[in-house]
Image 1: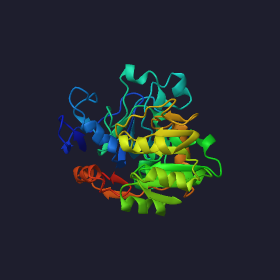
Image 2: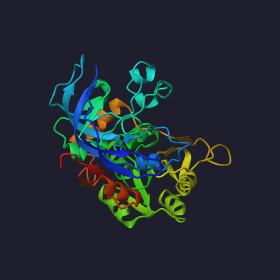
Image 3: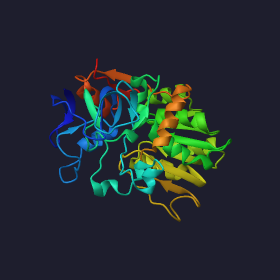
Image 4: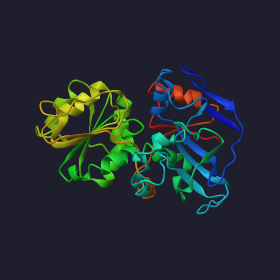
Length: 346
C-alpha cells in the first residue's frame, strides 16, 4: 500500500510503498477514508535528532477516519464495513484516567511506550491503518468522513479547552480566540454553540480574520501591538474572561497575559514555544493558566454530535495521497484555509 512517511531527520514527508498491515489479536484494520494534516506534524518533523522520539520511518496522520476492513482475533463491538473515526490519544486503558475516557491524560502511556497514531504508532496517512483497540473507534454514522476527520483533533482539542472553561463563559462574558486557522476557526464555532460568550478573534492574516467572521466571531482584530488595548476597549476595561491561544508563540501568550480578566483563564493550546510566567505581578489575581492536551473519548462523541446538528464544521482543502507533500508545504507556509485533508482513495 501507499503511505506518507517521515523517514529521515530533517527530511520532509515522502509517499512510499509499504506492506499492508495485518491486524493482530484485539486489533482492527481500517481502509482509510480521510486523514487530516496538522501543524504538530511539522513540529515533530522539525525536531533535531537529540529530541526526536517518534521512531523512523513514521507513517504520519493523527487525524483519521475509515471503514472497518478486517478484525483481529477477539474483536467485538464493530463489524466489517462500519464507518468510524479514530480517537487519537491512546492510553493504557486500565488507569483511572482511561476509565473515565480521558486517555489524553493517561499517566502510564509514556512509560509503557504507548504513542498515538501518526505520533509514534503508524498513522492514517496511508491506504490502510491498524487501530490497537476497539475503544479507540467512535461510530461516524452518516457524517461525511472527509468533512468530519479533522474533528478528531481540530474539533476535539478546542472543544476540550472550552468545556473545561465553561464556568467562565456565561452570558455577558468575553472569549478571545488567538489564531483563526485549523483549530481556531472550529473553536469559534464551539464557543458560539455551547456558551453565551461574545467571541473576539485575533490573527495576523486578513483571510483568516474573514474566515473567523464567517464562522461566527462577533469581532475580529489583528494580532498586533494594538490588540490588547482593543480587547480592553471592547470589554469596558475588564478584559476577557477566557483566552484561547491556538498559536502559543511568545507574542501571542503575551497578548493573552495582558488581555485576560481578573479570575479569568488562559488556555495555551498552540505549540509555538511561548512560555507564560504566572503568579503575582505577572497574571491578574485569580487568573489560571492551562495547557490542555487533545480531549476525552466522550468529548469526541459530543463534537461529532455538534457536527450532526450543524453547529460546527471544518473548512477543508482536499488532496490526494500523492499530493500530501504539497499539502504539507502549504500548511507550513500558512496558506491552507481551515484544514488540509488527504483522501487516499482519490
